[in-house]
Image (cartoon, rainbow, N blue to C red):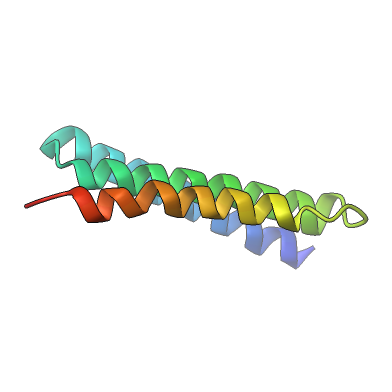
Length: 86
């Protein structure tokens, strides 16, 4: 029970970070903010998979899918970190 609450709060935190970064991007048009908000959105999706894997369907192993989503988030963020200039 408490596990699901913690995972849900982590998901809400990631969504809040994504939303705040997107709001800052709309004001400044600094593209690194956009890439970071996209990463946190994917991180929230990863937390959804975590809740489904660990709380809802404990008999099904979704670890590989969670890792694929997390790796996708990193592959989205990495070019943004490398290619963005001041």
